[in-house]
Length: 511
Ligand SMILES: *[C@@H]1O[C@H](CO)[C@@H](O)[C@H](O)[C@H]1NC(C)=O
Ligand SMILES: *[C@@H]1O[C@H](CO)[C@@H](O)[C@H](O)[C@H]1NC(C)=O
Ligand SMILES: *[C@@H]1O[C@H](CO)[C@@H](O)[C@H](O)[C@H]1NC(C)=O
Figure (cartoon, rainbow, N blue to C red):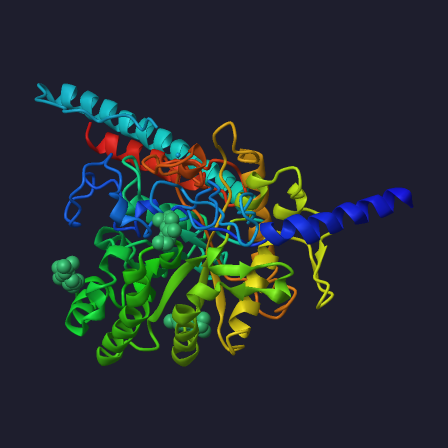
């Protein structure tokens, strides 16, 4: 009993003191720019001017696809030098608690006598027969190997069915960031995603090479307008032109279902971008309407959780007062246009900031006592759900219960600097694996139990050119060679076998 009381006490301390600053208050590194930004040179024709290793100029901050983890004191967030992290809410200083040889029939050449010809023919027939037998054996071996791999893959994905069966899509989305100089070709990526049954992808730009590689793939795309292009998009001609250039050419082969305008705009001090965000969204919406695409393509923007002034308990979630002037009309826009409100949420930051106070099991979706919201009496067994519900509460406080909320980013790094506690392959496997399970179970949050969580995991690949702490470059589910960083039950083996097989076939035809 004493033990119990003690535990309860600790939980309450965590819940009431630290959690206030911890839950849900997260921000990302805005220093990499909203996705137009990438390694550049390796991908010609995208209008990228910068060399692969160039880092964003300070003014280009805030459109990044990078989750980050540095803790910033409130008010110091988004100044471009930092991979952001969590932004403290009211807790100053500790803030941020949020992959045959059939025989080769060579040239026969000229033959002399009939007998010789006959002997030669017999020999040739025999050779061909041997080849046929060898080939058959080889094909059988190959078939066996493929069947074995397929069964393995089915096992890995939990018996969900064939790995090429798009009708068994996992439901989870993935962020396909490209701030790297070593990523596979978009067509290889298309094969990878198909093999693991992921059919929802979020880009930070509208990379035509990617959108083209996925044509007729059944993969749904969210494309992005970078932060640096927000002002430009407030002009109707430019907005229409952007859609004509970046969206229309890919429809309907590639399903583009949403345009995000900017990324984490309110995490920066760029008041011009903040003021122009909604006008840009409205202008893009009108342009879609005039092109007959309204309803087919949503318009939204992704927020870091540092837009919340308060996130715990979840029922008391509120947006920062200094942002009300921007966020109130934004939420109204989402309600009017029936578009989703997007948040980037990283419980990792909260854990990294306060590993002694934040229970690891709570942030990793592992069994734990949870945190009770004293107002609603709802029990939260994981921080992500608390963050989501805090955002729902903040939206409700603005008079809306009709706006859907989606998690445009969440993830966990498999590696980090020595001071980044918790950034391990095991924790990343557990975090992402547990999220996958909850998505499979169509789970909702305590406040919205009938609304399944809608999640885009960050990220598809480790991105070597991202700046900031080591964790920034290690959020990927896959290495650039398409090997899985850890096994969360997604598989990821098939593309290796498939590509190895293709390589062999190609090599033979070249002999
Ligand atoms: C944002 O602006 C405020 C007010 O001008 C300033 O105090 C703060 O340092 C700025 N923060 C960043 C990250 O630039
Ligand atoms: C504004 O957007 C249009 C449409 O995408 C583009 O052609 C133009 O170059 C942009 N202008 C600037 C200044 O970025
Ligand atoms: C647009 O967003 C709404 C609200 O989240 C959603 O119900 C609808 O399916 C989305 N439309 C598309 C084309 O994805």
